[in-house]
Image 1 (cartoon, rainbow, N blue to C red):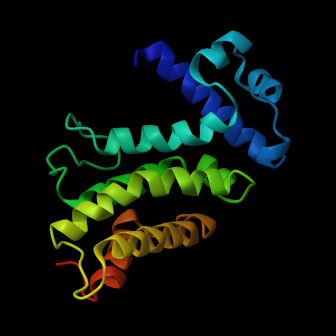
Image 2 (image 1 turned 180 degrees about the vertical axis):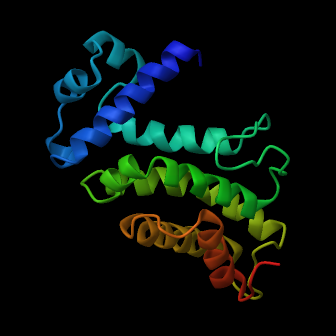
Image 3 (image 1 turned 135 degrees about the vertical axis):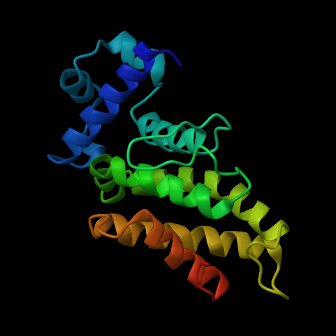
Length: 189
């Protein structure tokens, strides 16, 4: 994605974040987003087929970035040397980006868009949790692995929701540790 596309998409994300302070997602129209982001209708529809795609695409972009093999050091955190097979670093990196975009994520999480966001999150987290189960990074003996993946995914989303609603006050590393403790019954090393 080139810089102009990134700038346009960020303008839409920022517009939605701003609008969510004033009204529920369901009440926000594409016209509202266009006015607030100062982009044309055709530009919006070049990137999104409907306003609900903004929520899905936000989640896609977060995970695409976090799972990228070409990570660079970023302001506030550095996961550039982390392995994409280290689930805790992936989740922690994801949490840093949630914290950076907390205004938008809070607005989405506390609006009628929350179910869409949760479904998009589940779609991204389930394969990661499956990999954690298969590698025995997360695993509970005697419990169906598919069931475990669903439970760990729901657990992470529940912890994430509490953190977001609480204003993302704890560090992302602390939230990752909380998830790890619940999932494995042991603290991080």
